[in-house]
Amino acid sequence: MNTYSSLGGVVLAPPDPAWDARAAKQAMRERILAERSHRDARQREADGRRLTAVALEQPEISSARCVAAYVSTVSAPGTLALRQALRASGVQVLLPILLDDEHLDWALDWPPAGDAATGSAGRHGPEGIGRAEVLIIPALAVDTLGNRLGQGAGFYDRTLRLVDPTVRVFALVNESEVLDAAIEPVPAEPHDRPVDAVITPNRCLRLPPRRRR
Image 1 (cartoon, rainbow, N blue to C red):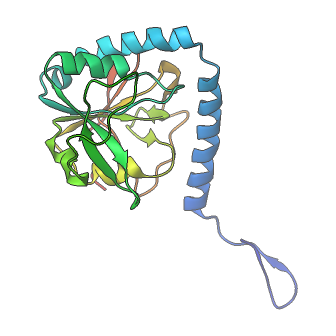
Image 2 (image 1 turned 90 degrees about the horizontal axis):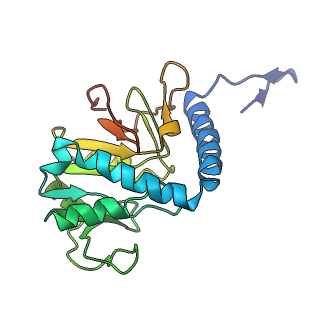
């Protein structure tokens, strides 16, 4: 914010890197959400099947006994087919529940009606994420350094602080949402937690080792 000196002139405040990062993130969110809103429903369904196939090819996911996932929004890459495939193979799937203190509780994903989790059975509290051998988390974009753009609430950044560094973290995005960090990096703030890999309907891209901040 600019201030006025005693002589009446404007004194320019130094740039605020945190504000710049937040503003850049918000602009990127708005662009990607707008692009997602135009995706055809049939295309999203086909992408969900292809994304499931790519995810199940990853050894960490295919060999896990317990995986943390999430219920995708309408415009995001779909997770229903992946969750069904994991449950069918005997894998326990944990889903997040938003708590009032801005943390995530975790509940078992039972065979739901439609695409809604029961949200009440088998709840394990925020520390329940420690049961998961693999995390599959949402993102709006991920760059090639592993920086993840979320919705801005910070739920997953707080969750990742509770996760052992040996647990692999996969983010799901559309192919166009994998950004070259040398050209269009995802702005990163000190509290942001990077991911280990990004899965699209076309591939799994392994990223640099996760940095502990």
